[in-house]
Length: 372
Ligand SMILES: NC(=O)C1=CN([C@@H]2O[C@H](COP(=O)(O)OP(=O)(O)OC[C@H]3O[C@@H](n4cnc5c(N)ncnc54)[C@H](O)[C@@H]3O)[C@@H](O)[C@H]2O)C=CC1
Ligand SMILES: CC(=O)C(=O)O
View 1 (cartoon, rainbow, N blue to C red):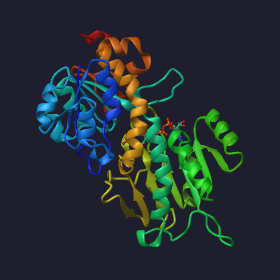
View 2 (view 1 turned 90 degrees about the horizontal axis):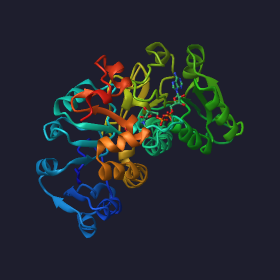
View 3 (view 1 turned 90 degrees about the vertical axis):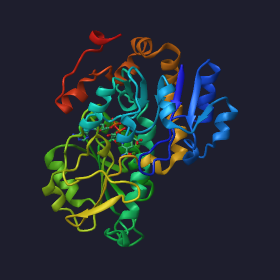
């Protein structure tokens, strides 16, 4: 198979879909890898390193899309990329379609076969291709929150851990999955007081166990959310219902009751966000804004700011499934692997993932009925 790796074009997105090490694995199995010039540079991988393992470097991205049978990326395609796809091409990347009607329509029009990293799902519910970036974003959310809490950034002017004789900051995390757990690790490590709200009792029992009393867990319901949000110095949104738009759990009224200078980091923004006052997706070069006196941060590609760590961590998870797609072709690969089948969101002009169709109010089509 011919596999194309374009350079990411999203604001400050320095990750790349394949490292030279990953390319070597595809080439060893008889595949051809074509890479857009400078695609790996932001993650510290030079064109010569790709060439050294047998990749061909393309300076013309249109030609790269025209020649490739599978495109491996990191972020969802942006409008300049919509016209580059060709019918039947496999697209293997994050897609986050549930809150993205325009992108979904573009992918349907292009009749591509789109596997979304974030919905590849194991039998136990785990999301192996989302997990590594959730670990990164969860850890970053506390670093970023700590910085935004500084006075010069519009924050309360407090240190997360305080110092002897002062109270530590209150960090409230909604959703105790991969993002939430990694945020909690960092916040606890810095000496903050941490509360995690989740709807999954077993997950709360696990968190209570592993943090050994250093976090408070609370059932996520309206009453508990109201109380926790009001006292938060740093509020982190980390909920997910796989494949669906994020539920809006924090209302405008709840935000209005927060302290002036409190900070919200809504990591769940890539699924549309979980905080009512988050009215825009921000970018790394202008990441926050103030509303009702509260600092809001809503960057949808947080790991793009630490691309070396993120590219390497992401590829460790995506490579085995990418090799299956390349070796077997999409149809055989998804039919033989249930987790990969759950990643299939769009197929030759049809939405084949129920949660995406429901969130967008568009028709769902069973893959088996349209499979070619
Ligand atoms: N902005 C960015 O750059 C990034 C965003 N993300 C996003 O962060 C979000 C969270 O991802 P993960 O932690 O990996 O998901 P996860 O599936 O590991 O955890 C989600 C948690 O939310 C909980 N939850 C569901 N409904 C809830 C509710 N009503 N109240 C409280 N908790 C609830 C679940 O029980 C689960 O524990 C996703 O939208 C993911 O795409 C992940 C990485 C980077
Ligand atoms: C998960 C995601 O959207 C990201 O890593 O950018």
